[in-house]
Image 1: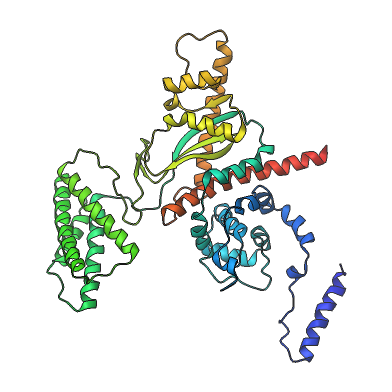
Image 2: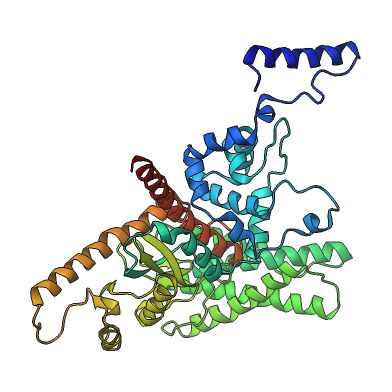
Length: 471
């Protein structure tokens, strides 16, 4: 490589030649970053924190079963900035940096290490598409296969994991970013949405507006919301009034649909279907206040979200998906993810089976007392798996050793496993899931957990490489 003085002289000579030919000096003049060779940049990049994270993620194997975008296949249209590997890298950067989608693009334009992480070199170019991160999130969510992707991570991380014979399991809930739902709030949002669509239709076809006193209903709702104390009697009366008002709006909707006057987009049709389901649920709840409602809707924007009763002091109920996680050597893997509430104690057999699929035989297993059913105890005894469950009956011959093992397993479960949940929620954007639909929410949770794992594995890989050098 030429010396610094000779290198600057070459650039100045090229610029003066273009100046003599009346050409703009900045055309085709490569930046210093573009002049550097990958053989020089890559070792420097791998020494950074992002470089260690890059080593811990098997981008090629993850992108192997995901087809490239349509424009990338045909070569038509605007040239794509990133490959599938780069789209996966953007999702990892989202949780690692905790930046918004727009801030990630601005940072990507200016940070050479982030460009290397995504597999591109922009040079003097700039990405102006601020929706690039969200568009890749939507595209990758269509091909999300959690079990297959986790298998790729396991095969990449397994050589750097030590205590693979010990497994731990627990469940946690990841809250969706929705407003706290109340019956009055849901009914009023439904009324406002239906009334606005009716007004748009009447204005478009120049027909008379329906004789519905929306202003009066709005005034009654505002007076109810301004009350400092809302008794159950007043709430019941207001819900009854809103239900009757929503019933009249839905009747008007049916009349417009029969006359083929109203045209709705697919999203609006889904919203109307959700509102009708909500109406019947709220009507049933008003007439039978003590009975349970199946698949209760708590959000018009995310009708798939269900209330998860947690029984904690701070949050008795959480609104979002519930995940059952398997932890091996401090690394978490998703065993089951659902928006419906489930009893994690019934999934012990499946969790041990998944542990055997990933890492081989399980000898020790840690879980809380909800897993300690007679069926699970018999299964673990049959498989020869030591647990942290309190022993029933006689203590046996080696009671002191068994007690010490149970105590250590319980300690690891209560510190390492429970601590990993807080780490993921506080530092990797899993406290509130800000994605807008069910598929992207699941992708958000998956990459949040895997990014937290990759940070740990990157440190272990760097330490093992250093130890090999010392040896």
